Length: 275
Image (tube, rainbow, N blue to C red; front, side, top):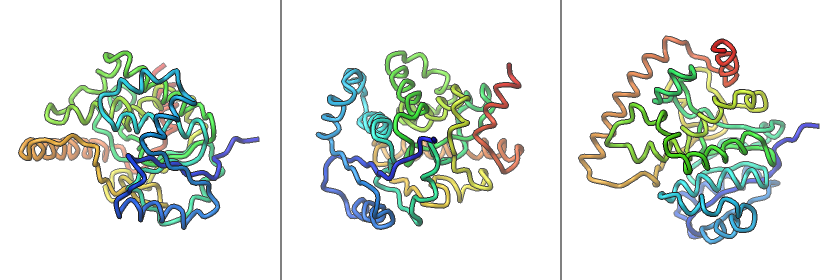
């Protein structure tokens, strides 16, 4: 019998006092999925969750320098512990989640990756998102993601390949992305290719069409509030944005040569071809 995703939604935030947008997103999830259990964890409850269920990771959790890294790590632990779906507080759904309940593990396609390491070493020009995902309780891919987060914190040099080519002005943002965020999740998938058989990635018909980036398949959209990103001098941030936009245009031209369609199972074929 398959271990499918249970009817459960998990979210987290600093406190239960949410912004108007966040309240709307929560109501949206609940109204579309009225028979789902709903779990919300504020900062204090996250701390208690770590102590109760994952005390072995307390030192790692406390060592993250950025708050968002703790939120990232928590989301993987919570879905691994309970099973269900995790959603950021800026994700809006257009459809209920019933069509995904028969899968064991579901992640969204996020966008084409800027990572030279993923492209050159693993033949992967895309990345999966962590703003929304679902998995059965104790799913092995989430266990692998958790172990990757721990390794990235304990062995900083392990992260270095993912930081090659990262613009200096946005280095701190990419450090987060590659130690607990989408870069790390995608790297975990390509380095544990056998787990791809038990996963479902919500790829669009055309991964090079930017209109379909940052969506939860055809079910919803990530509004990209990016409240976690480092604040800084206006000119520095503008320069970083322009540089990353130029870099992505370059990567987009490279990816268009590969066609429109992608499959996460391509990593298995790439691994076999490289062996």
